[in-house]
Image 1 (tube, helix red, strand yellow):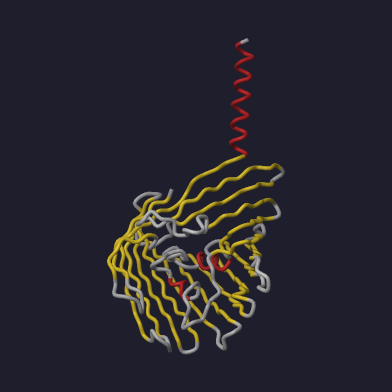
Image 2 (cartoon, rainbow, N blue to C red):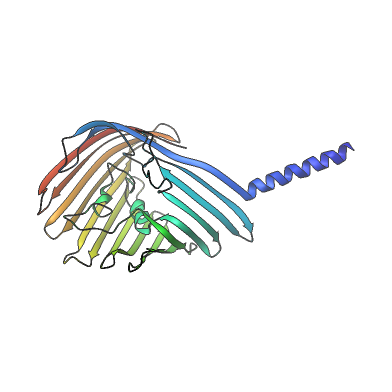
Length: 330
């Protein structure tokens, strides 16, 4: 009798472990909060305040996957950005605004449906030492969301109502296709494509997207980015153009950056970017030092200067921001 009960218990335990192995859910995120002096060009005087997400976006996420057998897996990702300084969600009307997708992965690659990061955001994030979600230091904002004298870049960090396909890795090469459905009569759907190569110290990406602003206007954007790890420093660079159909000129953008390890736990980050439309320019330069206190916790100090030289008001404005902060990943 004892051996029979033991066998039943062991079988139940093994079944529980098997179920756990097939279906896994985890909670993760990042909390970044800083104190400093913040000044934006053309706006009110600089303010001293506590700010969230200066170096990295603050967010909480849930993800899980289930093994369906035969190499096929189902998964989901839910992420919500957080203002650590106030405790509020940054997308108050769209709580899972950072990411909300369900997908399948296998030998064929990966397919997701839902509210996904755009391919342009992912490319920009990969080739910037400050990443694309840094609110204070990311010079990528020149093309990725800040208009230069009225040019609308057609950039969004996320595409809602989207389907995204990413191919398997073939000798370092991967490709992605993305479609965002407008679900509005008379407005075209958004289309994006990306080609990536990553092997050893070298990574290169080309991304193109066509975004419909309305029934009569769209923006075609392309970006070429790359990085190379020299060991003593990692170099980053991007160049791109945005062509809005209702405007006569193209917006042009470039960004150069570097990450330099100065100690086993510390890195210097620097970036310069410039966006230009006709005779108007927007320029940003950022410099920061990031120090890892542990595997998940770090502290940083940094400064950013942004200058706008626009033909129309505000014609010539500059702002300098400085922050000291701490971040914790979980």
